Image (cartoon, rainbow, N blue to C red; front, top):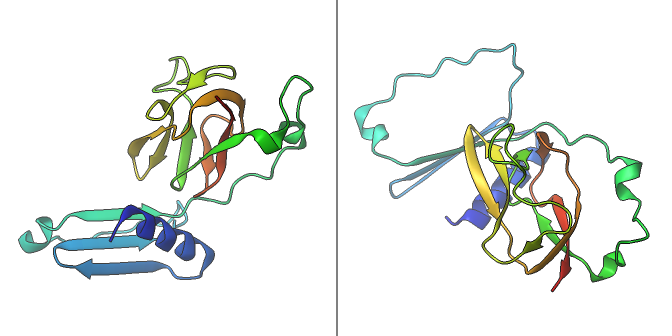
Length: 163
């Protein structure tokens, strides 16, 4: 099972009423759970030694994103037309962070040049911090997401003017 298939499963689970999905294949175990209310406590059963050797990937659906802000959607006069812009999208559900840690400068700012492989942000999912790299070459025109806010799979994060 590849990463794209896992992302599609997460997307489908997020849109459905399924509480939990577990898939096991040849030494691979995937467990996806819907996010539970914070007031509920879940007690995990003891893990047997045979299960500890199996790699586990777990993902939880994030809360729905906040409603779009009208001010963020208005193009400024200095920006090029949006039909010529490329979009860097979120490859996963999680929490978007612009900088490597609080108090540090953001990975990229509006006007910065990016190229394939350059880290543009971090998305935290299940206490794992995933560096998101640009897949395009160009100049950052707009940051579409506020720092420390939840993002959905395939949600636009940055607009880039191609180089």
